[in-house]
Structures are given as structure tokens and as C-alpha cells.
Amino acid sequence: MSGERQPDEGMKLPPGSLKPWRSLSARLLLLTAAFVFFGVLLVFLPTLSSYRLTWLKDRVAMAEVAALAVSAAPRGEVSASLQQELLHSAGVLLVVVRTDKARRLVLQSRRPPMASARHDLRQLGWWQSLRDTLSTLWAGGERVVVIIDRPPTMQARFIELALHERRLYEALLAQAGSIMRYALLLALLAGVLLYITLHVVFIRPVRRLARALERFGAAPQGNDVPPLPLGGRRDELGVLERSFADMRAQIRQLLEEQRRMAALGAAVSRIAHELRNMLTAAHMISDRLSSADDPLVRRFSPKLLHSIERAISFCSATLKYGRLREPAPRRRHLPLRALVDEVFAALPAGDRQLVLHNHVPQGLMVDADPDQLFRALFNLARNAARALRQSPPPDEPATITISASGDAEGVEIIIRDNGPGLPRKVREHLFEPFVAASAAEGGTGLGLAITHEIVHLHDGDITLLEGEQDNAAAQAGPVRGTAFRLFIPNRLRMVAPHEEDDAHHRAAGR
Image (cartoon, rainbow, N blue to C red; front, top):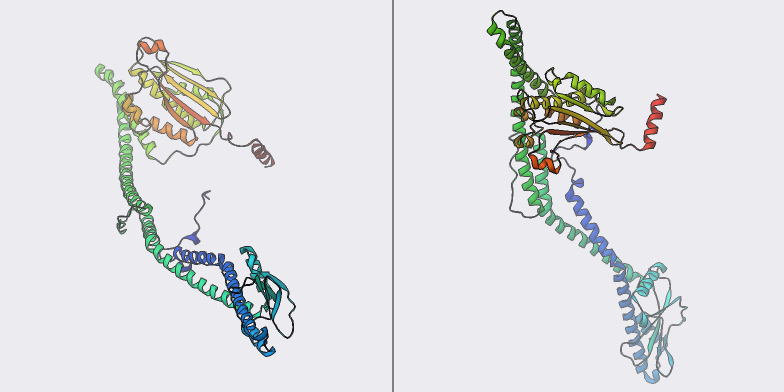
């Protein structure tokens, strides 16, 4: 069972099957209406407070008119029935006028009211107005309140009146319902207008791009995917559409190249397999020729055998590289110095005559797959030996040196020779297959590519080190030799100490 997370099949929806209420357009409409409605709610109480203040100001004006009517009567007195009529028309229970001289009761109902609250409109702030509005709504219209304000036209210090809040409470409820209806209508209208605008400007292009991505993901090499209509937009969506069109063209080109390379690789592997069989037969025949009595045949048969061996080696390397990628390394801690001795011992007899230095410290352990690390080091050592055979150093013995050092992070391995070095053209494409074949006669050009893959399977790194020399050597001439640096990290270098202890305890428990 694979450890990779499988996609949730329930989340896959075919194109066009998205529920309307789950679409981006529906969510945008609901969010817009909700935000507009919330904005109206922010001004709901201030609007009600302003309406309440206006309503009370109207009652003050009507009470002033009633007081003026009483003042205009003979001797400032009116009948009891007229007083009740004036109070009823003004909607108040009591009217008192305060002048500079005295405080005079102008109108009064038959039963003097008992006030529950007192509100002075002359020094009313917005916060106090909000609190008074909430108290009116909370009381439910059952209170009698006293209102004090400056009269609009009378020459008086203030006018004081008492009224029952029932009519004010009902008016506030009616006004609140009207505000809510208008708020809902405004939210719906603003949401629809904004939805239409955003749908045309944003949602529709995004949907078109999403459908194109779905069709392209289903058949990246198919010809049934219509080209994406690119408009003249210069915003982010225009950039996204053009980037997707370019990406689709590049992916199709890469897939076509991959298909051709796969077909070519299969053909090359088959050719190499058949050629290797032919060369094996030729090698057996040439081996028999080496025992012939003819001196000329015996003279040239070793060269023929050597050429056939190189051809067989090339075919075998091509077949190995044409297979699937290297398997995952089976890592364990192993002594590096002994592994380097095995690498030197595995070199051909002619290469072992070179000066081979194993400078790996005794006891240095490396966390790696022994077979894969052996192949990586052997490829590098064999390449160095071939280069030294072709172009040995003029003033010193041909030497291959392998040194190493380690710490808590991992092990660093340096493989160095004093050969001719690598040409610049080879260095630019060093780890690509078949590129470095011309660097050493008889090479396949696959050794560095395989070594690079092995090192990266260990989460490590391989780099080509530039030549190093002191000032005196720098004046003598160009740097000779090639050096590669391999770094093999430890697997547990990022594990906390307590986690490592837990792992040991679990292993012991098994």
C-alpha cells in the first residue's frame, strides 16, 4: 500500500456539476447583501434616535401653540373642556412655561401624571440620545416622561411638558420596520448590481479558465481542448490567462518530446540488447583467434578483444540506464575506508598500477547503501584512471586520492586526481547522460549521470570542485586535475534527541 495520500473521490466534480448555492457567484451575492445590511444596521439606532428627537420636538412645538392659545384668551384662562381638547390635540398631559419672572402652569389634565423619567433636550448628546431611545423601546410605551426644551418662538426660558410614551413607542416601532424594509431592499439591490458587475468582470473569466484547466488536465495531449480566448485585458486575470496559454503550449511540447524520447529510448535499448548479443559472440570468436598460430593474428587479436569489450561495456551501461530509476537505497552504517579499498581493488589491473591514496580516517562511518555508494565511487575512480592513462602528468606520478571527513550532519568525500582536468564544454553539462563520453576514451558517458542519481537518492549532493593552488603554483601555469565532492547526510541529523530515544525504546519493545 502506497504511503502517498490519495485524492478524495467525493471532492471531484465533473465540469458544470457545481451546486448553484455553492458557486462563487452565489456566495458573492450573499456576502454583498450581508455586508450592506450590516452597514445599514450600524446606522439603525442613530436613525431611530434622530426620529425620536424630531418627534419630541414636534410635541414641544404643539405644546407651545397650546400655551399661546391659552395666553391669548381673556385673562389667560380657558374652560376645562377646552384645556382637555388642547392637551389632546398636542398629545401631552401637562404644559408648564418658565419665564424670567416665574414658572407658570398653563395646561393640566384632570389627573396630574406621575412622571417616570425626565429628559432635557437642551443639553442632549448623541450618546444620551441613544440611551433614551433604547430606554423608550425597553419600557414598551408604559411610562409617563417629562420633556424640557426651549420653545421655538415664545419668549421663555424653557417649556416643560409631560406625555405618555405609548404613541412615541408605536411611532418608533413603525419607523424601525420601515428602516428594516428599506435596508433589506437596499442590500438586495446593491448585492444584485455588484453581483452582475463582478460576474462579468471576474467570475466569468475565472470559470472559463477553470473549465479550460479541467479539460486540459483530463487530456493534456488531446486535440479537443479549444484554445483559450485571450482578450486584451491588462489586469491580473489577463496575465493569468496568457500565462496559462503559454504553460499549456510548453507542457504539450514537453509531453511530445517525452513521448519521442521514450520511443527512441525503447528503440535504443532494443538495439543495444541485440548488439550486445552479437558482440558477445564476436568476443568468443576473437578469444579463440588469440590462440591461433599465425603471428599476425596473435598480434592484433588483443586490440580486437579490447575494442569488443569496450563495445559490450557501452551496450550494458546503456541498457542499465534505460531501465527505471535506481531503487531506494537500503542504508546502513558502514566503514568508509574499507569500501574505498574495495573500489581501488575493483579497478582493472592497468589502472591499479597508478598511485592510489586512501586518506579516509580509520573508523569513519557513512550512512549509505553499500552497493550504490560503491558504484558511485567506482565510476568516479574509473573515470579518473582513464583520464590519467590518456594524459598522464609530465612531472609527477599519476595519482588518485580519496579523502573524507565527517560530522553530525554527514560525511564529505573528496575524489581528486592530477590528470588533465575537464574541458569547459563538458563542465557545463557534466551530469547529463552521454554528454561527458568524450572526456575519456572508452567511456560511455553514463557514469557521472548514474553517480549523480545515486547521491541524490541519499538526499546528498555532488559538485565539481575547481582547481586549488597557491600563488607560486598559479604563476607556474594552469591548474591540472579534477576533484569531485560528495556529501552523504545522516538520516537522523534532523531528529530531536528525545524523538531518537523514543524510537530506540519502540525498537526495543518490538
